[in-house]
Length: 252
Ligand SMILES: C[S@@+](CC[C@H](N)C(=O)[O-])C[C@H]1O[C@@H](n2cnc3c(N)ncnc32)[C@H](O)[C@@H]1O
Image 1 (cartoon, rainbow, N blue to C red):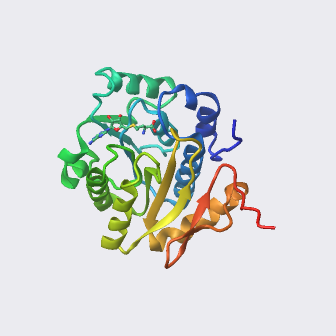
Image 2 (image 1 turned 30 degrees about the vertical axis):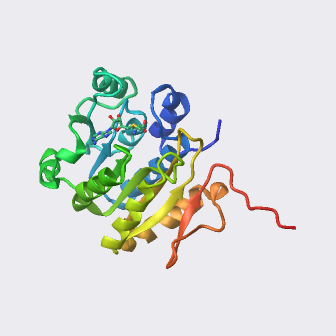
């Protein structure tokens, strides 16, 4: 098992003991990196809610919810109809079993394409979102919908995490991100979190360009042994790349 931790004790206990026992698809590597960012945000006073689109049984959701500060809430949005109608109750039971207080987690059984930013804002009581994980329907249209749904509610220094980027099974959805960057030049790729496995695929972390400096050095320091030294070439800038087993091709 990969030795990786967020630095936040409650998250790391969950990652070490229970993460892989909760059914789900996100990698423990990515959850540790995102847990580190939640902790960093708390240290910086970046406060707000955690939102996940595509919560399933709560594997990744629980890790992030355990890192929130008192009074902050975690909202899980899902159709909760796959693979059967029991998935929402299994999600809530998993939250309770792994230490997420009932009044901290909120589930919303809805298709993300059927809600507006105004309705989401109302659900959040007008509070900003500091961290979002988008892991719902893996189509370009839905990813664009989900990005435009959450971005207006994002804290100025908030982070959006996008699942299954560069996944061999969904080659088209990454293009939705680049279309989004073209429409929102204030947003930047903060980090590519490489995949552990085909079912625990890569994630992109994005935030406003002006917020990059809050997170880059902390990520580099905490995860230096996972840093891919060549980084990600975004044509006009380079973004961090963290990968479970970094190495370069041997050329001599
Ligand atoms: C890959 S699973 C999520 C895995 C989970 N985030 C994890 O890390 O373990 C995708 C989830 O997205 C949900 N979903 C798919 N399309 C959706 C939509 N349009 N609105 C809301 N949820 C959706 C599915 O019901 C499913 O539970």
